[in-house]
Length: 136
Image (cartoon, rainbow, N blue to C red; front, side, top):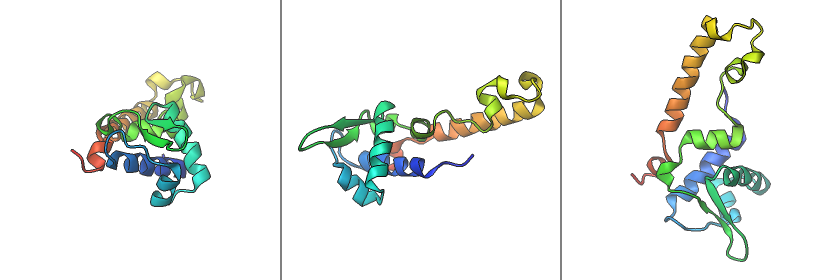
């Protein structure tokens, strides 16, 4: 599994917001500039984070973005899934119909990859943005 560039940018944007005082609204241009994220890309990523309930968007003259919930409640897994969808190391783990052998439940490879996927999800869920921002 390889995380894409959008996820890396999303991590950086959420971490930037997590370092601010709770409730602080940051302008998109400030986030883009400080985190070296292209503005158009940032706005696209922020839409995904807003839809996932990670970030809140504010319109108007003093508009921008802020965390929608406390940083300690937002994990790396939350951000990955907001940007990339469900974590899956193989498509047969998402939908048994994808198994060419039609034997996902009894396939030793399926079981092994399932264990790897579970471990990956656990590790991504273990890290929250309060810790990553040094606020714990």
